[in-house]
Image 1 (cartoon, rainbow, N blue to C red):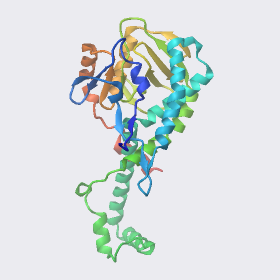
Image 2 (cartoon, rainbow, N blue to C red; image 1 turned 180 degrees about the vertical axis):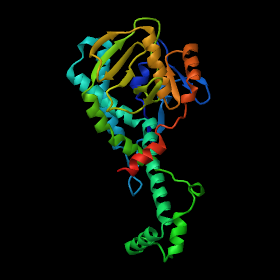
Image 3 (tube, rainbow, N blue to C red; image 1 turned 45 degrees about the vertical axis):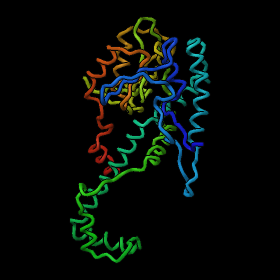
Image 4 (cartoon, rainbow, N blue to C red; image 1 turned 135 degrees about the horizontal axis):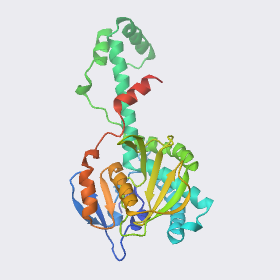
Length: 324
């Protein structure tokens, strides 16, 4: 028997809610290759052992996978109730959904990649600082002395060797952040995200026309307009203009905002298109639709410039780290 676990970073129940009546497959659009293929929910948004960590003895720890499953179970009941009767939602339902969405945001590879980029920015900033130290005769002597006293040197190393090591060009080596560490770092943020969500208003937006919502490998879309034709995706929870969109079926979308009114709203086709464009731009790679649609395919190609953009501004992050 295999000792591996198929971890869905987008829950299967969420994916199944996007199946069209009578169909067993979703249509998955690859933003990297523009390929489109029919795919079963069980084979979509899944990575083997993604949330499974190992202890020092090599034993697998499934705590995170079990925790996420428990949160999903409670949220599924509340989401099912919204689908059945949007106006009957309770405070308990809203709380369980917001907790689920906080973890939903932090558990996907896109958010994990953002945490990794922050870590790498920190390492890059540290290397820049060490280079400056190596070029300063006074600081480098002091730094070298502290290093020798710490006992961290694996062997006797001269001052000249120490400085030469600090001056090794960054393009001569590669730094890799452990994925499990990045996943843990991302999940830790869910507590703060949940606190932000708890003071946001939640609405249920329903479309009764022919258009339909899509989802993706980053199903909670976090969007914040920062200026004319400018916006950030995936962050900005503390900004009053931030808008969170989470389609739960092709016809219903949960929205969280600081300013908009809570309750049930009926929305037009243009609104659906806007949410779909944001979903595409904010996805990591895969867009998921109940239908094979030329309309969605055209949107993906039109928004191709957003694919593989860095999630954070490395230089800006380094400036912030230097000011801490």
